[in-house]
Amino acid sequence: MAVPKKVFGIILAGGEGKRLMPLTADRAKPAVPFGGQYRLIDFAISNLINSGLRQVVVLTQYKSHSLDRHISQTWRMSALLDSYVTSVPAQQRLGKRWFSGSADAILQSLNLINDEKPDIVVVIGADHVYRMDFRQMVKAHIASGAKATVAGIRQPLALANQFGVIDADPDGSGRIRAFLEKPTDIEGLADSPHEVLASMGNYIFDTDALVEAVETDGELATSAHDMGGDIIPYFVDRGEAGYYDMKQNDVPGSSPRDRAYWRDVGTIDSFFDAHMDLISTLPVFNLYNTLWPIRTQSVNAPPAKFVRDAVGRIGNAIDSIVSLGSVLSGTHLERSVVGPGTLAGGGSTITDSVLFDHVHVGQGARIHRAVLDKNVVLLDGATVGVDRERDIERGFTVTESGITVVGKGVQIER
Image (tube, rainbow, N blue to C red; front, side):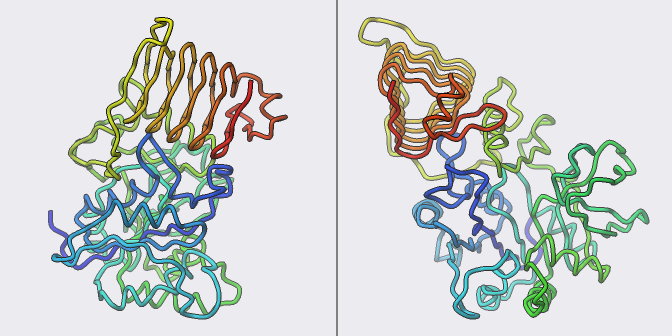
């Protein structure tokens, strides 16, 4: 299905990601590695490109070097066909200031819209894990006559206080009656009382309406200049905001199990849980859907290898993902995701964990329920995630659920 009008894509990638510290100590949240070889930004860009969009900008701000580099090295489109994916930092076109919110990021970047003159603008976040065909949402937006459309994903009623929630008009018009931020008392959907429609942070706008909205918002000193908190309520108050139920979206190659998967990986626990969703026999989110591929930078490395260690011990790998360039020698690996270039020595054990690029695991070392950033080194016999109190004493981040996080380049002694 061809996109019926000229559609322009904007990805909001300027957030600090404080709740993912220390993984965001040296990088923007959308640049955080995920699933072995990907970055979080790859899911947003892949969804837009797979949906037929060919002009996409990524608005960046904090600690954006690795994010900008990844986009420039990975997402190279054909200039001959006027196609591009490009990162755009805060340009300070309206004064010597940073973006003060997601709506202000668009306001300060209106030159990009004015240059392309699209009919429709798709605005999405950069740090969610999901698949979505935006062509179907664009078609529904145009047919509805709404000026703004919000994508909603069904979530349990008990989790309503964790999301912005769409209160649909009961007249069946497809309009939003109210947009509620983390409500504590709300009724479920008419066709599913135990569920609510949570905002996915994905929006579609008629271009002229979006421009008018962000310009109006920019003049309000009391506004937080936030897309979900200010711009969508602006359209709701005018009766011009519609919603799109993700249940309608039919992504090629999706299964009933992962068809409506969406995960906000804004915390360490949700980031960890999203990885665990990847590794089951029938994964909750399937990375191997070739009809809707999640694309990323090709890793220039040899295949992963599993060998006996120096004394002949045989390792094993169960329910795990192992990336290119990794060598596991006599290692027990279970329910884990291992990034490129990881080296694990004889007798080591890695369980229920996420390892980023080039982690070195010494002989006899043990890792359990941990997230290790790039270039972490465990010396022989060292442990992470085995002794909570010791991990805290060593200055590691430990979540309430017991996940230990080790920042980039740390060497861990026995």
